[in-house]
Image (tube, rainbow, N blue to C red; front, side):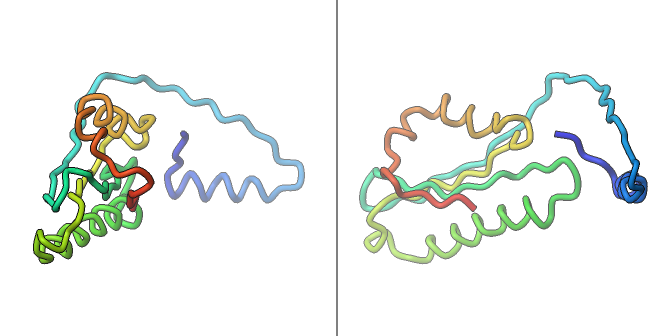
Length: 130
């Protein structure tokens, strides 16, 4: 993915208005190892079968409209479900906020690889991705 800042984006748009405009984008950069963290927890229900409520929490820029709202929705679901007595929650709920969304979904992939036992408890076709 290539992200362009506001002012560079405005310049590109202005140049693109010309009927004969042409251009190349040359991207130079490097990748380096880094650390990212997933955040998760389980709200027990009547069975070990789980429904996952998930979103990612990282952004390349200011992510309030995408990432912030996803996190807020997961936390709102957690708050709402935690007020319901366990006797009325037929399945357990796994709340997951993943990192590395813009790096090939590495947080979700790592969670699935490391938490295999939890993945095996997922209710088939029951999930909520926010």
